[in-house]
Image (tube, rainbow, N blue to C red; front, top):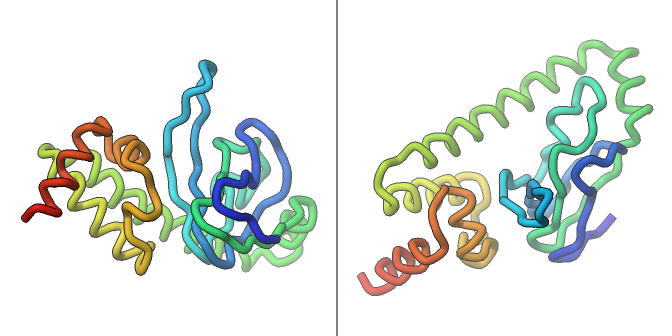
Amino acid sequence: MILHKGETLFLQGQSGPLFHLRSGLLKIVRVHPDGSQILVNIIVPDEIIPHHSLISPNPYFGTSIAIVTSEVDILPAAAWYEELEQHPERYRSIGLQLQDKLRMMQQRIDQLTAIAPADKLSKLEAWFDQYISPEKLTDVLTQDEIGQFIGLRRETINRLLRAKKES
């Protein structure tokens, strides 16, 4: 399946299949009761999502939206879990996938716990280079999304990016 920028793969609270991202990028946003959204994760190629449903089913934690044109495989839930039952050795590969994602999220926590706003942005840019290169941070995320991702206001992101351009 091909998703174009801005198209939704699944909605928060729904249940359904798992997905394998072949190419592109997806963002996971949490939608609050008032309709506001906050960016909580970026999904990179070769990830299978939702992560919290790799071993047992659970409703989708957030809404998944294509950041760029993305190719996604649908993995029917019943077939996925039946395959695990029949081939328990697959749990190891799932464990390794979850370990990789946990390490990625630990780096994200490092970004969020940096004190200086410029350090938060620099750490996000380094993370982006490691996991999402060659895409450029500002070509993929809006300043508002960058701010949500590292706990800063959009105005602060704008100021930091402008200062970087000028230096």
